[in-house]
Structures are given as structure tokens and as C-alpha cells.
Length: 202
Image 1 (tube, rainbow, N blue to C red):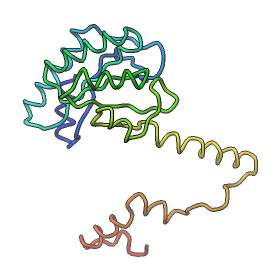
Image 2: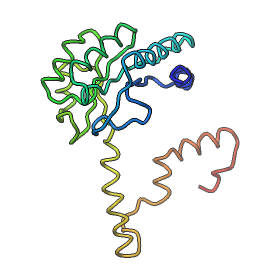
Image 3: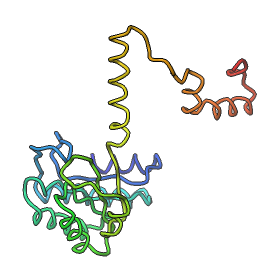
Image 4: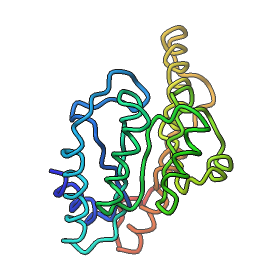
């Protein structure tokens, strides 16, 4: 399953992916109750990922993620990532680090291997800026909830307004602007160059 995923992602042009050590019924890395597979199962996943990449001749970046910090402790997470480095992954994802000091120590332990930092506000890891994260030694930082945090409160507000007032709030962007953001202009230009008339009256 891991090999097939890596090969399909590589053929689709995906730049990188995480391979993790949670059971398939996984949870967000910043929630409680996560369950891990044993080390050898984790390593077999990583070996399959690396072998699959080599088989298709891809440069897709294999990132080894561990969620061991939360339940098994910092040292277990370190040992799992050490094994991942030996297997030949490209980068490491040490999930749910508990402090700035832990983050700094993780980078020191794996100096020479690119480290990914997962920034989840109000999660297990303290909030830091991109500059702060870089100063600790991380090479990659992701903000996985950024768009959800921006969209969900505003969506709830709009739905509450509709429920209370019975109509949509004033100031809507309108379909034209919304479609332009989604690529309408590019679609119209491509259609025009192909001799089509799908957007003739737009």
C-alpha cells in the first residue's frame, strides 16, 4: 500500500509526502489517544517508500514522521527517527514537540538531516514564527490548520446570519469574482485559444 501510494504520488508530480508510525485509524498529531505501530512495521513502511521511489526513478521527497513523543516519550521518538535516517529518508517530522528546548535538541540530534516543524496553534507545540523555527535549525515548516482557522469561524458567522436574518450578508463577492479566483480567466483564455465558444458571452 505504501509503495503504491508513493509511486502514484510521484507519477502525479507530488513533491513530497509523510510516512508515519500511527496505526491506520490515525488521529491528529496534537490530539490524545494516538496508537503507534511497532518499530519494525514503521521501518517496513519507510523501506517500501524508498524502494518505490527508486523503482519509478522519482525525486519525490520521503519525510519520516513519528508520533511517538506523545505516548512513548521523546527518547523513543528519537530512536525511531534514527532508524529512519539509516533507511534513507530525506527529511524528518518529529511531531508534537513539547517545548522550544525539545525542538532545538531534536535539530541538534539530527544535524545534517532536514527537519520539518509542524506549527499548530494551541496544539502541543509552542507557537513560533518562521524565523524562530529556522533559527533552531528546521528546514521546513508547515501550517496545516491555517486556512481552516481562517475559514471556519467566518463560515459559522455567515450561517448564523442566514439563520437569524433569513438572507445572505451584504458585501458578497458575487459569482464572477469567485470564479476568477478559481481560475475563470485562465479557462476562458485556454478556450479562446482552442477555438471554443464556451465562454463567448462572459
